[in-house]
Amino acid sequence: MNRMAGRVAIVTGADYPLGAACIARLYAEGAEVVAAGSKPIAGAAATCRHDGASPDSWRALIAEAQQRGGPAVLVNADLRFFAKPFADTSLQDVQSLSASGIVAPWLGMKEVIPAIRAQGGGYVVNVISALGRVAHPDAAIFSALSGGLRVATKSAALECARQEPRVIVNAVIVGAVPLPNAAGTQGTMESLSVGPAIDPSDVAAAVAQLACDESDYVTGMEIYVDGGYSVTAAR
Amino acid sequence: MGKLDGKVAIVTGGTGALGRAFSRALAGEGAKIVATGRDEARGKETVRLVRKAGGDAIFIQHDVTQADDWARVIDETIDHYGRLDTLMNNAGDAVLKPIDVLTLEDLQYLMRLNFEGPFLGMKLAIPRMTEGGAIINITVLTAIVGNANSTAYSAAKGSLGHLTRALASDCARAGNNVRVNAIVPGVLFEGGVVSPGATRVHGGPDGARRFQEMIAAKTPLGRIGEPEDAAAAAVYLASDEARHVTGMEFVVDGGRIAGGN
Image (tube, rainbow over all chains, first blue to last red; front, side, top):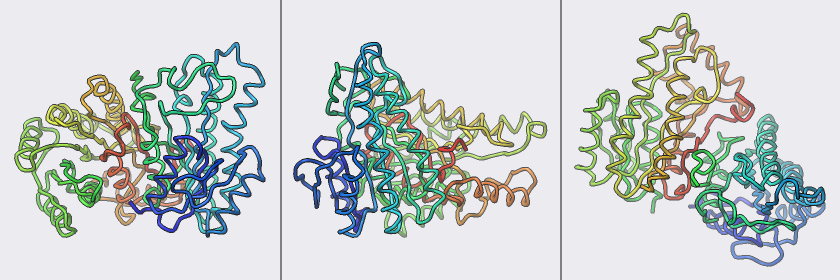
């Protein structure tokens, strides 16, 4: 388990179990992690407060990674859960959720990919909900943003495949992992029926698989860590 | 400490380049390998390579289209190694021709080898995976999308792909802790060379060459893949790290499917 030795990785969502698990796993794989979060966390060489909707905030993360010779890897793991009946969802809800659900990972790719390329290429992994593939009552906006990010990930992969040094871009699609709730949600991840409970460390294992050289011929792809939920309708 | 220490894996088509890469990669993480196939000399070469790298492997002669052969292979695996954890349905073949040239015999041959063989294997292996297990079916990009000259091959591999999802669902409901996934390669050739098993390409050797150039040109990462590219996916799917991963298609295609092929 040393597939990322010498690599510097930016990981978001450090304050929550998913991001924390990714940080722990990448650290165990030998990476030096620059974490986006509000407090120091085990496995991270540095932690920066971060606003995913702010380009300057991304540039601060990049600068921290560059001081360490990176970044070679970006993991967008800062998911916020949101459930509300379609008709009750306000425009403000949508705008607020968009900031975390698509603007932040999109800005992350926009800002960090050139920095990854500048130091010789590397890997981007976006963690996305399986509700981006399977519809569920009360999840219209969450599904829309998740589905949008899935396709944006593939589009970024195709663009990056055309440029040297190569940046490989993939996604890990997650089922019922514990997620922090976005403002205004009327349900929790646990209150929806999205398959068996998934431990964040299992998500982190898939992230590591896609963030190392074993996956250098894999791009625009998705690993589903959802207990079969999205393809088997197992509830 | 390997990711597959203590596990036992059957790799069908362990006689070919892809099966050999799977065997070596799984053995490299500690799995004991039963490489199967029809060509004893090539199978024994796979065993030799695994052992040379410090792994443990045996070869069992096996025609995957024969139910009796499957029963014998599974019995001998458990007799020899004491358990069965992983089945890689890797044996397969392609016949790539326009439909007006394809024969019913071509389709039946492809269905028997690419679909009925894995069906028989899974049917017989799952009850013997007493501590759970991982089944990995090797399909192909053309199981998901349409490609020229692939009607019969697509039908056979597409059937296997959907069997994978359906069986994953059955196993999830049964709670037997058996996961069923697929690896979906684009085109993978050892050293970029068309393998002996994939030469029935329309147009003969020249057709094969043009086929390769066409594939490389439409692969976003710009090259034909190597068997090792898929082997890393196999290790992941066979390992306990993928314990929540089932019914999934692990695509190893240099980015082709992301853009619709």
